Length: 266
View 1: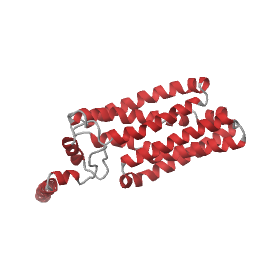
View 2: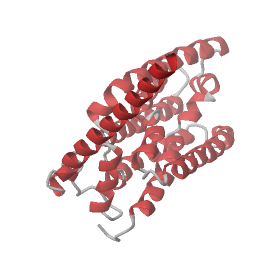
View 3: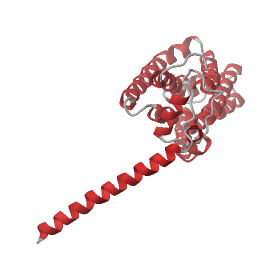
View 4: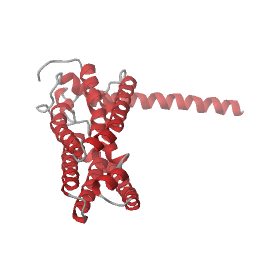
């Protein structure tokens, strides 16, 4: 850990990092311009490009739906790093295949790489960047954090969409290599800067930031039981007592309302 920081400062840094990273993975290079990519770069006809774009969209939707089942099991860090590596290889494959030629073999390779990219993105980078800001922010900063995350996301969305046609015209296959590099860079970025939140309550995540002030998180304990061990199990006992008190208060309030309604009925 280099510089001790208040948890709210670290949260803002992380929030400013994850949403732009989602856009810089190149999702909108393919989502917005996939028919154009397949027609201009791969060499397919316009009709074939549109049909294939629809097919990959269905693959993307299916992968995203499956991810809802696996995000909590595999964890945010593991999915983000592994899928960023897969996306980097996919963009590299698209760039190399479109540079080699416009024959059937190159078109098949490019299509497979594009489909692979959509599966990888759907498994991790589609949902986690929207989920993560709400998980790492304290209650007092959650609304502001969500606003900051959304603003950064749409700002970079605009930048990517505006620069992609220019890049495709001047750089041609080189634009795919740029996004291959971006995705490769996100592997160490996630490893060093992104905290694992799977299996943690919001209170445990806040406690994790209190126990680990600093920029780098790669050497810290990401286990969800870490905070309980650090507190000697006091958090569980406190939460159990708090929950029991809330239940009793609800029962008292609910019971008094039922009695009042019973009297009014007579």
